[in-house]
Image (cartoon, rainbow, N blue to C red; front, side):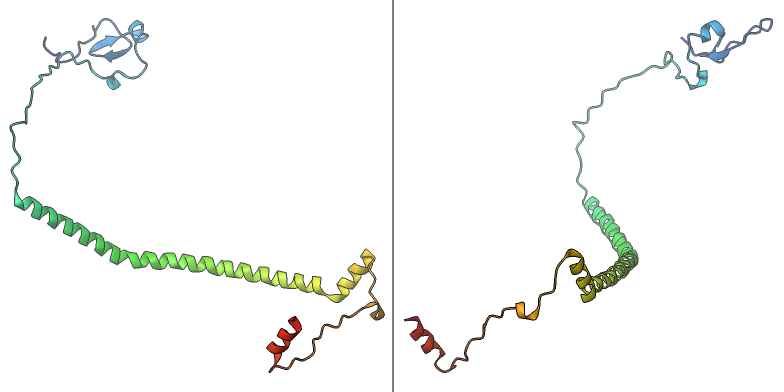
Length: 175
C-alpha cells in the first residue's frame, strides 16, 4: 500500500460544502459523525508506518575505566563550587545587609508602638492613682474615711540585742 500524494480534488461540476478529513472531502452527513474541531488537529492514522523491532544486547559491552574521567569530574566540581562561592561572597553580604535593614525598620516600628503604649499606660496609672479620684470613687461606693482614733497600732519593735552575746542569749532563752 502506497501513501497518497495529495487529496483527491472535488468534481468541478458539484459544489461540496465541508472540510477535508484524512484526504477526503467530508460533507454534512459525514461531518455529523466527526468531531467539530478542524481536521488538521486530529492525529493521522498510522496505516503506512511500519515499526521494526531490533533487540539490543549490551551484556557484552564492558566499561573501560579512564582516570581522566575522575580528574575532569573533580575539575568540574571545583569550578562549580568556586562559582557558587564567588556568588555567595558577591551577593551574600548585600542580601544580609538588606535583610538586617528590614529587621531594623521593623524593630524601630515596634519601639515606637511600645513607647506610645507606655505613655498611655503612664497616663492611665496617673489617673487611677490620683487621691482625689480615689476619694470620689470611695464616696460613690459608700466607703467612709476612718478617723485617726479608729486606728490601732501594734508594737512590733524588738529591743536592741547585745551583738556580742546574741547567740548565747538565744540559747538560754530556748532552754
